[in-house]
Each structure stands twice: as structure tokens, then as C-alpha cells.
Image (cartoon, helix red, strand yellow):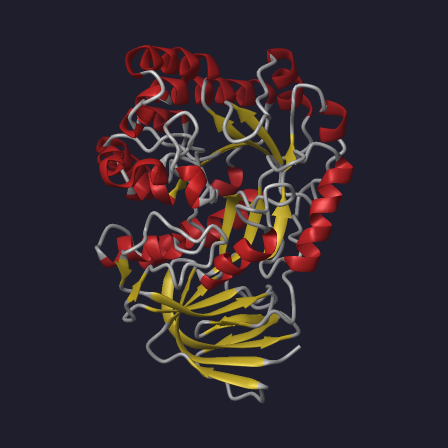
Length: 445
């Protein structure tokens, strides 16, 4: 592998911003210092730019196998790398669902061959695959995924006895999608009686309501407390759920953690009027009061991680009426840009963006030697220019689906270089696909 010397960067790491150089050799960060004069195959002058750890996105849907007309591991990992996401953890609701060890191994084989970013894949739980779930290796797999509310796919776990067993016996972190199915079905029936097939998109947050989210999240927390489960609740979307989480202990000591997604911080109910099904997702984007509460709770450390729940569908699929338009939106290329936009508007510091998108996922999932700019760690690094404007257009959207709910938005920042495990995978708009990413490993007892 090439050696690299990054010079004169504003390094953002572990609550500090300082001017320095970074030397990369054999895939790892070998030295960090105020000034380094070392021979390197390539020297990058980062004057005026900020060097961040690579973003770790703990929740994406890359659609492979079986749904590759929407996206695939190659296309979506490229989009991720272009946006500064160097590692991802992908969900099991593909076709077939990733619910056996053989199917999980097959997905890892695809990742090894085609993922430009570092990768891990969740093992999916169902009502009847507990034996397979319990075989999952906690050192090489990011976690077990449970849908405690149906979303895209058919993986709803609604058998209480099965849930009890998984929470009691799971050998590792459980990540859950929490929405109460009975509440959602009752709400949808009411809206169908009122509107028939033509339910307005703006009704989505009333159908997948605050009550549905809180009821399911509260049950998950109660189960985790009962069984001392390592629980991670995905995509918190309501102010009501926030009181379920603690901020009086360090993240590394928490047994119950929570994530917020960029779209729940950025959009609100009023945006359905202009974006409609483009922002239809589960759990739903809700009233404005929720996004304000979510941001303040993120800053107060009740919410631990920022992720995307990147979930592409084709444009044609999204143009259907409410009941047929699938839920999910593509975001992995622009999540860092969105959070840098929050920073530039004074809503969050740069150090906190890095904490919540890089450090916290590494701590929460106990990722081995990633998420920080440290000597001896993998060189997952992102150079960003906070003075370069970039407008999201059809021409520069990297997702296979070819669209984004952020189309037309101009960001005042740009990712210029992305290193993945010491490989310069993206530089000034161009990819180097000569080396794929690495499989994530985990330091767990």
C-alpha cells in the first residue's frame, strides 16, 4: 500500500481541534504530530481543511441481495465514501432476509468483493430462528436486528415469548426498530375509512404515531432492564421517547443506548407538503417540536449516535399513493454534509459532530481500532473543506436510485478526500476502486 503524509490539517478529534500532520503506512495511522518530515508516496497539503475520523453509520439498507434495482453494496458504499462515511453496518431485510448464518456469510462475501467502505452486517431475528441467532459471532458481527414493528420487508417479531428469549439469551448487542404494530394498524384503519386509498402523505406521522413509537420503545427498554441486555434503539423520532434514556453515565458503561437519524433532525411534518413520499419513512418524520427535542437531547447525551437509516427506493416506486409508496429515503452520501450545515448555523460544534458520528458508534459497538484519529488505529479519515459550496444535483448524486430529498440544497462544505483503511478511496470527485474496504471487527468480552 502507498504511504501518505497529510500536512497542515485542522485535526478534529476527541473534543479538540489542533493543527497537525498525519502519516499513514500499511493502512494505519503511524504518526500524528505538529510537523512531520517523512518520506511518503503521496503528500497532501491540507491547509485550510479539516481532518475528521471517518464516519461510522450504524444503520443502512444497501438492498443486496434481492433488491438491487434500488441499490447494491457497490453503488451505495461508493456513495457513502463520497460523503465521508468510511464504515457501515447494514440491515438484514434483504431478499432473502439475512436470518441464517449461511445467508449472513454470503452477504459478507459480497461485501469483501464489492464494498469500497468498511462493512458489517446485522443478523436478523424472526419469530422462529432463535437457534441461528444464538450462533452469531460477537467478535465479527455488529449485532442482532429485531423489527419490533413492521417496516420494509417481512421480519416483524411479535411473539412475546420469542422476544423474551432473544433479550435473555442474545450473546451481543441487539438493535431494534421500535413501533407498536397494533397501534399503527388501528390508526391506518381510521385513515382508510376517511380517505380510502388516497391518504395524504402528511398523515403518515399520525398513522405511525408518537404513541406507537413510545409504547414499543418502552417495552424494549423494560425487557433490556429485566434481562440486562445490551440494547441499542434505532432512529428515535419523538420527544416522548427521550425520557427512556440516561445521560448520567459514560457511553461505554451504558447497557441501553439510542440513535437519532439525520432526517429526523433536518425535516419535519411541514415538509410533506413539498416532498411528499420522498420523506415517507419508518418511523415517520413528525411535527417540528420533535426535531428540536431530538437535537437538544443529542447534545445532552441522552441520544448517543447520529446515523442515516439510508434506504433507497426507485423514483417510480416512490410516486405511488400512500399505501403503495415504500418507506425509506437515501441519505448516506449527505449525512455529514447535513450535520456540517448544522455546525455552520451554530446548532452544534464541530467536535460534537465528530463525537456523535465517529467516536460514539465506535464506542457503542466496540469497533476495533476505528472511529478516532489515533496512532495505531486504522486510517479511516476524511478531509473536508468548510468553504466549498456544493449543490445536490442529479449529476452528483451517487445513489443507484438517482434521487435525493435534498436535491437543490446547497451545502457550504465538501468532502475532498476519503481514506478507507489507509486507502485513498475518494479524492477530488474521483474514486480509486483498486482496493475494497475491510470487514469490521469488534472488541467484546
